[in-house]
Length: 184
Image (cartoon, rainbow, N blue to C red):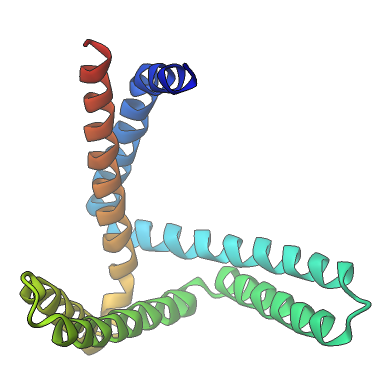
């Protein structure tokens, strides 16, 4: 009984998912149209996320102040996150460069991990796709670093655009699938 009620509620929510998908697609298109503005938006979003996290971590530190090592670790982590957030707002261009270097390093590390994983999967069908994904991550990370600091002006915005576009496509696919299911 509860299962059929949940399915009915889920099927009836297709309209909201379609609206969210359309908004996400529109945001992705706008981000692709102006990658620098999208990069600045991503940096400011990261800044405010760090600030919120820092404040919450500092509050948490004072909630556990009876345990000295936990208090000190939580307080230092909160102050560091808060300082990073304030720094990103105060000097957004320097923050964009730092975040872009971080993204490039993440791509490179993920590339190495995927290549090691592909090597471990080698006898299994499909290991080649993991290998190709690892190579692609390595190449993307290398390309970003090779074009620094110029790549910093657009990379974060392009990545945001790709995420918004894929999210929008996913939400629309689910929405239209739910709409079709609700007709049966």
